[in-house]
Length: 221
Image 1 (tube, helix red, strand yellow):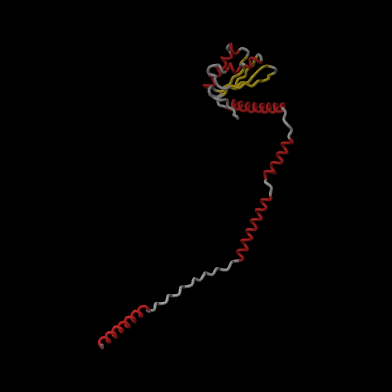
Image 2 (cartoon, helix red, strand yellow; image 1 turned 90 degrees about the vertical axis):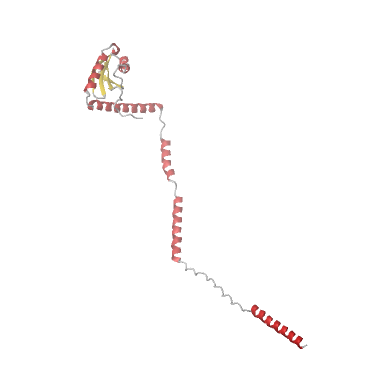
């Protein structure tokens, strides 16, 4: 019996010891977690009131300028109104007035061409070879039967241009002179005839260019 009692006591002591070990393991204190740092919001700088006031004033000035620009009328209306009034007040041009204006412009153009041709005839140097041959050719052509009714009184050639003075028996002889002259071999250039009034006689001045060349005057569109 004593052995049994001591055995029971031994088991009880072992159980108590074991329970004490597990209790100590389970109750081992943990280190307390460090308190999390509190995030402190950054402090904003105080508003610069003077700067905001200046910005508001600048915006206000810009709005005032835009309003003034919108209030002004477009410039085209100011310009177009007088032009429209002037066109409405302008009297209509009749057909006779238009023809008179066209004839005046034609005469002015003829005078310009004559002045340029005359200047070239007086200032060009003389190409002795070409000028001599062409003067002889023109003179012989007027002696032929095709030029009956027209008489050559003067011919002078330079380098690119010849000037002819011709008398006619009448209007028909004058009218056909250029077509006859340009049919002569070696004279195929350009020619212009200017009627002249010499004391009631039918006469003309003819400007003749070198074959293959244009008459020396300014062309206009």
